[in-house]
Amino acid sequence: MSDSSDLKNKFDALDSYNWNLSLHDFKGNDQWQDNWVLDGKKCELTNSSDGLKFISGPEAGDNAHHGVLWTKETYSGDMKVTFEFTRLDTINRYVNILYFHANGIGEGEYKKNIHEWADLREVPLMATYFEKMDLLHISFAAFGNSNDDADDYIRVRRYPVREDRSFDQIEVDGTIHNTNLFLPNVKSLVCFIKTKTALAMKISIDGVDFYHHWDISTVEETESGAFGIRQMWQKESIYKNIKIYTL
Image (cartoon, rainbow, N blue to C red; front, top):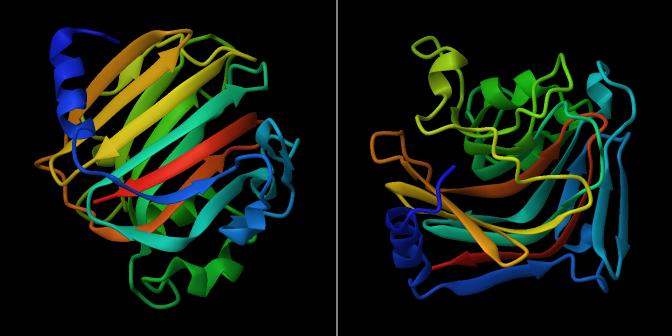
């Protein structure tokens, strides 16, 4: 993790684009069902003045207790996503994920429009997503599955797994370890900006900014699709003032 001037300059350059606001939600006076659909039936979603409280199912090991929120709309080209995030759970396990430009792989039942096969994701098995979807994945407030060490990470992956690339090979270089950014009950302002060649991050906590940058110029491009938010079982968070910008 670094807040060097070089990372800041890269972020600021992308942030200076002429962004147009395409979605502003979780403001406290709206219903999440207006703009989103949910994979998984074991989650609890509650709107309040604090934002959207997203509580995943309580049973670790039961895939039905994951949850994924998808935008009804699709977004094309360069994207900027910002939101206020507060982690409520206190377990140092499991992950939260953002999905950019999500499509199905276009084979058999897994049509490009992911909303056409939502019934196949009533149980949000993670393998269904990294095997059957074409998208860019960002895991954050993320921990391992087998211990409670506070060794969190932020990782980018390019789905799907295919015959020519294993699960390990879909990871994009630049994973950050031990960020110590997402402590329970601490609000952060999260921003990711994705273009054809770059992914830039800024996370602000109590007036302190943290930056990171991934070079995705050699990663297979994603162009258009739905935006998603995943929580594994036992994760609890508040998302507020999510804004999606496009050019």
